[in-house]
Image (cartoon, rainbow, N blue to C red; front, side, top):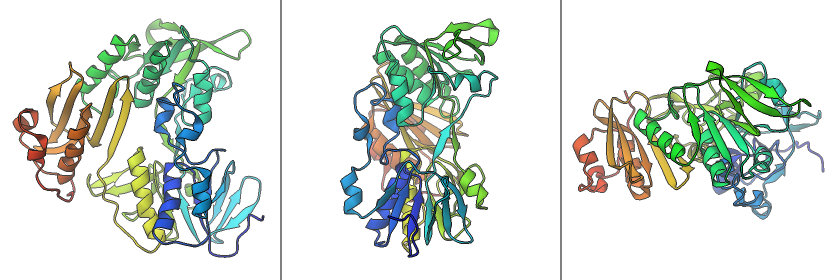
Length: 426
């Protein structure tokens, strides 16, 4: 079968959560023409959140991560080109050029290129990446390499105290691995949550046996005589930490190079409008790779979350199918560590008041972030029902009484009131 199509054909570049959802949403919204998803990995589109949790602990296998099984793609008549990399987009001729030189012609195009793990910049990093025990975590193959080393007594150094780093630490502790976490900032989760939340999670990890260190930067690495393994991590202050393996989790970079080379507008992501359409009207984009105008925030943002990937992909599908709809979802996220289910909605940056409902000591609470009296974000730990109400409250973009928020005798649903549409933040 030739890869070249002369008929109308929608291609989706990227086989992650956004790419998979975009394909099926197109079918659900009535597009019946030829449709193909292109992915660089050999796997069907799969969930990434379990990579640092259940999959890393060995509690499930790769096929359990798949968003849908092969039969679903066949039934929906969605083609898959896996283990294939698009080298270039020729917008003038509406062609995709693969790294092997082959080409296909598209009528419309979806970009769901996601992101990649941010690399370390120390001088030893490039050498370390060629070893057998220095890892980044972004895909199934990364995790397979890491979890082979999850053996009792092995010494793991995790570089980065964000969600991925802390989830890796929790998963490793569950497998009786000795864990050290290194965070360059004064506290973990510093970019996304309040100091009180950081302190809570630092205490949880230390009580679980993690050697968690903040305000410490990695300056170098030691290697074995063969040069094929990292043996120690050097840090500021002359600290040297022995390591049997290292996992780096210091953030994500959006994959925008393909779009930028094609002349699409890029600014901290592929720039899209409220309908997920890029600067080319025949190309949409969705997921971690995009910068979009947020009705909720009143500014342009880039989100790294499954809900954003799914909901924006559906909006992108509507645009391709001729059924445009404004993307106006409120951001939300989650993280599982030990027996804690953390659910977050809104964005807390710029808050000026922190209100606690419940007990951190009992590991069951909700933290409310207010800005000039208006609720802008909520972090809920082991409070799934209250979180669902909190999402409505944040979406309302209105003031709430801090004392009432903190008072557990007042049901949260009584405070929420009727569902309201989001309004732009100041």
